[in-house]
Structure formats: C-alpha cells, structure tokens
Length: 309
Image (cartoon, rainbow, N blue to C red; front, side):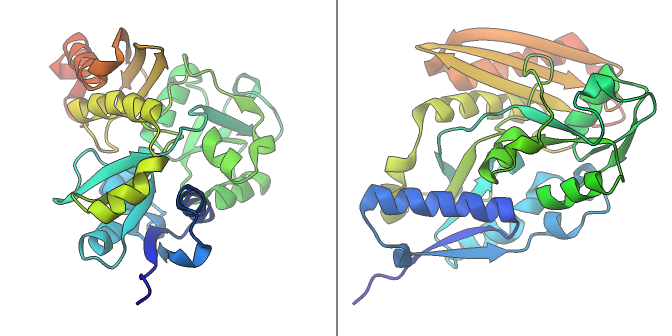
C-alpha cells in the first residue's frame, strides 16, 4: 500500500508558496524522495483577506495562521510552513514550531519610487507601511513623512509604489530575495538603527507535538543557529506582548558560544523609543531574551504602555 503524500499547508501568496516549495525541496533532498511524496496545500487566511485595516485593529498575527492551524490540528495537513515573524508566541494546544530553516538576511529594505534612500525623500512624502514597528521607526527618524497603511502581498505593494500611490515603502529583504526581487531594494537598512521584527527572515515549520513520523522527516532541516536566535527573539516578544499591538524589534546574533541581543520598544508615534543590548552564552538564549524584555519594561515604566497596548 502506497504511503499517502505528506501534506504541506501554507498561505496562498506567491511568497508563501515559494517558502513551502523550499521546504518540499529540502525534504526531497534529505530523504531522496520524489516530489509526488509531498502535496502543497494553499489556504486563504483572514489576514490575507482583510487588507483595509492594520493587524492591530483586526486581531493580530493569529489571523495569518488560524485556518492553517485548524487544518493541522485536525489532521487535514501534516505540517504548516510559516514566516516566523507572523507567528504568535502562544500556539494552539498540541502544536509547536518544531523546525526552523537556516535564516535568510533579516534586515528591512527600503524601496523608493524616485529616490534611493529614506533620507532623500522630500518633506511630507507619502510612505506606505504595514506594521507598527516600521511606522514607529520611520516616525522616529522622519517625523515629517506622511505614513499610510500599506498591507497586501509583495507584488501588490510594489505595484502601488510603481503606480505612485506612495513614494516609498519597506519590505523584508528575505522575502525579496526568495522571490528573486532583491534588485527592487534601493536601500538596505542597517539593523543596528532599524531593528527587524523578531524572527524576520526565518521560515518556521509547525507540526503536531509527538508526531514521530513527521519529526523524523523534519529533523535534517533544522538549523541550530537559527533555533537559538529565535528562542531569544521570541522569548523577548512573549515577555513584552506577542501580538501586533506593540512596536518592537529584536535581533539575536551568535558568535561561537556567545549570543549578542539587541531589542527595541517604541510608542506607536515613535516619539519615545527604548533600546537595549545584552550578551551571554548561547545556551541561555531564551533567558537572555526574557531578561532584555524585563529590563526594557522597567526602563520604560508602566506609563509607557498605558492606553495603547
């Protein structure tokens, strides 16, 4: 009797499908299996359908995962492929992020319509941004700019830019690279000044806890360095908020047995911003992220969060 194909659930955007195909290719190579041994199952999510409001208004990151996770929990798919930055820190019972592929470049890219650099935009220029983190960072750097909500997939956002709806926008460099669109980037933002979202650039695979067949299939794909980086960044995220209501950035870098973490929280308007750097042993990755979050909370004070979280 033929073994049924492993079903890989994913969002239906072009980038999400590219990421799912990458997971399929890696599984094929790791286990010398044919493409027919895997089936990619594209799914529509609420976050993809509701583009007229910010994620903070309509419910946060879970809107990109709910339908897919229901299918995973019910056994309709075997694994789910996600962009790690879209994943809430609390997952449905029985599911976990079991595998992280090697991380792509986590930095943000600025794409200008008539200028190449953010600093070169004229005063009052309109910039399209989808996330509170990017909005806060831009308002902190360039409070004169006119920021508008700019959600949608990569292609639709680039088209709006081309059509002159905005003069500039930001996208994750990793997504542009995976789509072969890295040449669209006119400026790569320095991660020290412009911290990425926790988990940005990393592909996560979600599966059912204690599913031994799937665990054995996924094991060769796991990247230890990425796992440690994200343990730190997601611990920081969980201790601060874990949704899309808090403008925050995080990046963990590993050098041998040492981990260097940078974190940031800001008010939505970007007028107040708190940053922190911590270092420690990689074995303490999650603890470093949590400690950084607690120190930032203490540094910012309760009034910082009042009324908008």
